[in-house]
Length: 454
Image (cartoon, rainbow, N blue to C red; front, side, top):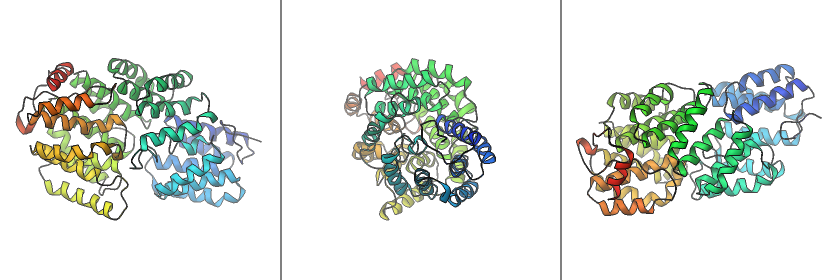
């Protein structure tokens, strides 16, 4: 009987089909390009191997080809009678996922891994901050992800794939000491693991190791294929470290060369969030606005995300609309989200409308309104989706609003109450200029932090 890399039996009896399938799954798990070709080889060797068609459907989904995704899924479903109970359950999880039924897909994953805990391909859909738990919009989702992975950890031991995800989840709730050996073991055992590199970048951010993050990413990234799904996002991490170090020009080079919205392979929402958040953070750090980049980004948001529905993309789209002189577009965007909230179809609730209106208020110089909107939603900011590094942009905006308002005591309290360990917020001091944005590109991060807390 043939098995996958995790010892689970597969229905094909053709060794070359099994081997190619395992290769394809590993490429998806490590976020390296080429998975589709591996699944094609598996299907060529055994056209009746249902799991290979599911894998190909997932590759099509990640490549942004929904029509081909549905065709491959339909083929897999038609082959279900020859599949095992585990494989039929596996296919059913992806059926829900591809239909956009996130709640049903997550429920199916929980049931599936209770019986087949080592089905890593299925588990990968919910094992990270960008998965079905991390993007659920539910309160307590960070701890919920840790609890979910804790229960499965005995089944994986020191498996390199699992430890990267488990380690990052632990890092996100502040358990850096427990996270570090898992992430480091993962990279030592499989350095060609983009998610392992991603987890290490987050660990460096959460533990305040900016220089270590820069050194690691500069060493690791040159060997990563530009067509890899995390190429842009990992360069965003390096760009963020550079910005924190006061190296705006280095960050902007990365923006232009590696993670601007129209420049790399990756999910549309990831391109938008990386690009808009970097430009916004650069301004918070005291650097002048790049009007041309913002204009291009607004057009990208309008074209690629015509309507809201995915919280992480939605609040980053709000950043792009907030710097637009046409406030009607942002208000229409917010109202569309609020309609989804009223209909019970927006798990993040009112957090996104509140923060979107705060961004708009900040941009028009109404810092008191921005503060009044952000402060009440801060306890629930994890519901916005994404990592803590991403959501820190909201706290940075609040800090800058306090400083721009001359409310230095509240700024000091905000910094003092910040969770221990992570990189400090690169926010310029209380000097104000056009639109509340200072133009001091030479200001170093350390001086900015001193201004912020004096």
